[in-house]
Length: 153
Image (tube, rainbow, N blue to C red):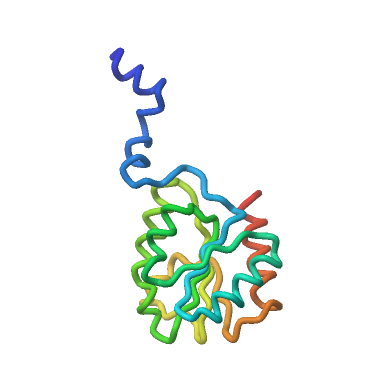
C-alpha cells in the first residue's frame, strides 16, 4: 500500500505509465500545426495560410510526419493528400494512438483532398474537416480558425 501511495504522489499511477510508454505528453500545443505534404510548393502555400491564422507551422514530408507528430505535439495536423491518400496511411494509426494516449480529441485533423474521403479511407472516422483542392486561403483559413477556437473552449 505505501508503494502505491508513493506512485500516486509521484504521478506514476493511473495513466502515467501509458503516457510514458508512448512518449505522448498530456497536452497538445494548439498554436502549433503539423503540415504533411509531398509537394514543397504546397507546404509553403499551406504554411503561409497557417501563419495568417496566427499559428506556427511545422512542415514535414509523409515519411517524417509520424516522428514529428510525437516529437512536436501539434494541436492540428493538415494532410495534403494525393488521389489515393496512400502516402499518408501511416498517419491514421499514429493520430489515433496520439489521441488515445493523450485522452483528448487532439490533434485535430484537416485533410486537403481533390475528392471526398471514401468510407474505407483510414481517415474517414478521424478527420475533423475536409477542404477541397485547389488550396485557397478563403477555404482553409476559416476552417483552421474555427477548429482551433472550438478546441480551446
